[in-house]
Image (cartoon, rainbow, N blue to C red; front, side, top):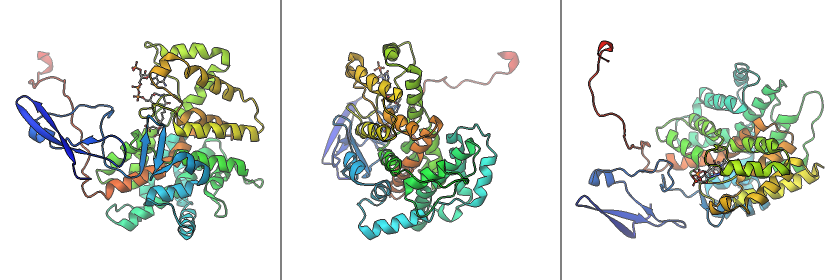
Length: 431
Ligand code: SDX
């Protein structure tokens, strides 16, 4: 933490409390309220953490007004165009872009950890075939701590490193296994001669009966989708991983908690919900009906893929995703994809509607991703698992930053209690 260059004076109830103010590299200053309860006997109140910095971090920065996303200072649009997913993984984990040999070594370590323990195959047989792949992933990733005991001691730097590599390497394998199990096809083993994205595609779409050739355009689109989902500051699932990790839980359990949180339709589940919404709208002429529902305070319906806690301008990831959607659909020969036409018209109408403009609601990362994944042949149930495997590097980089912070404490928020005052027990005859 940088030293406080200035402070704020809080005066109430004849009390005067000086609160240090810290300035970040970029972004809003923060007010350090850690001594507020001890000196003022009051809590702050911020249920959705709309104005609360829960930690210090040097990994990712978002400027919601500018629509800017930086990973260790590098803009996401530059990384999406010029880098690749495993290079972004290295950057997020170690803070700098790798030199050539460092990238070769890192890629070799990940490649050599892509297989899962053979006995983990039996976990899948315990699930119903129609289980949502996210349910399977939460279970199987949590169970990794039952197999990889030699990388669960969080106080050992080497074990932390091995756990990080194992998670990045094995999540695509587990996600692909969840998919194969759900469609009754045999699991496909990873292939060490394929790059990360190509390997995931072959584990999902190859079958033993014939040779599977990865389409390089789809592999590039898949790699870009993974990059665009890699990390995103202290979002709900990352905050879940940090809070779980603050108790000393092992990294596999923490990532399983992050997967569970990501599943929600307000968060990573929005990509599935968005494509289902676009399909439900069906045709451009039905868009006004859904815009009206989204604006109706009495209707819980929201435009999935729209809005964001931080972005009050275009989500830079949505821009790149939109360009990729055009490119992939064109190359796939899926011209005039009706769902894409509805999405583009919905975006155009929404962005000219006073309600959305006034609330600064723009398409987010989930608005176009589903259209690409659908065109690539994935069922909607695999959209959030792909988000989860892509975000694993962000979760584990943030977890490592938290675990190695000498000032970190177990997360234990307080509350505004509005329940009953103390009262005596009554027997059932007295009630
Ligand atoms: C992700 O945090 C991250 O970084 C997440 C993420 C990541 O990479 O980790 O970016 C990934 O989760 C993206 C968001 C995916 N979710 C969706 O697309 C679901 C639809 N969006 C909304 O549920 C909502 O916009 C949230 C949850 C994304 C953000 O909610 P906030 O910040 O709590 O905003 P809010 O709900 O307070 O909304 C502010 C106003 C409200 O109206 P008022 O009460 O002020 O009158 O905007 C309205 C909302 O009703 N609003 C919407 C809307 N989103 C917000 N109205 C219609 N449709 C929407 N989509």
